[in-house]
Image (cartoon, rainbow, N blue to C red; front, side, top):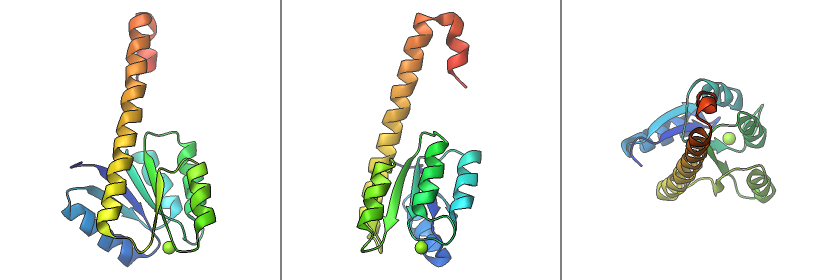
Length: 149
Ligand SMILES: [Mg+2]
């Protein structure tokens, strides 16, 4: 989807910057950060549709960052970039609520396909939540103002 907002998190700055440029050329809005702490800070400040998260990073790795992202309770989907031999981490990521994972180095078209899927899932979850809130607002108009923040 044109305009999908992506937060790209990877400690290899050159990789992250090049991937950001590639995705921007496909009409995505991309912010690149280089560690998990910066990713969490960015998500606290700004809304993103999809987070593309590197598994292997010094300090907070992808799994630790995913856990923190989940704690924020946002409408955002996370795609983990794993290396070969990271099957356990990939399974753990899915268990923790990641949308999917992809092996690095990844093909740009494969990445875009998964970003699109993640974006759709995020949109569906947001719409479902909004529909439920509207339904409750209709049922109890006096409480409606509490539902939308
Ligand atoms: Mg890395």
